[in-house]
Length: 113
Ligand SMILES: [Zn+2]
Image 1 (cartoon, rainbow, N blue to C red):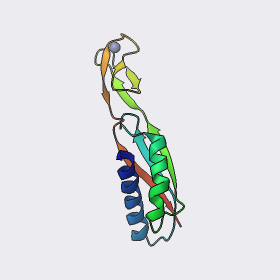
Image 2: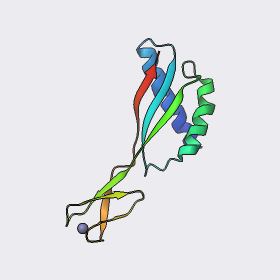
Image 3: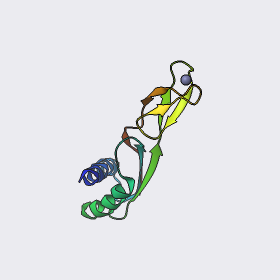
Image 4: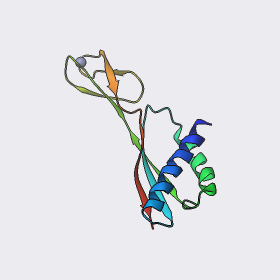
């Protein structure tokens, strides 16, 4: 499952980070996920809860998801158009604009003890 490998990847990054800093418990992991990253958030949360059981430091870690919207800019009007799917329309002239960002997943911060 796609989301399972993502969850394991997040936990791996967090555990590496925590052990590098000499921490023994991971309390929470904050991740930024673009709305166009193709990740099912409820599925990711579910997978995370399953995957954390096989970790050493993240047994009770919480996953905090920050959703990052993709943004498009109209070349003619120089206006930003927020896009929640692959195509956005300019709010001024209504023509399709190129959508940037919103495709990434990033571990933003890790809260440890
Ligand atoms: Zn426009």
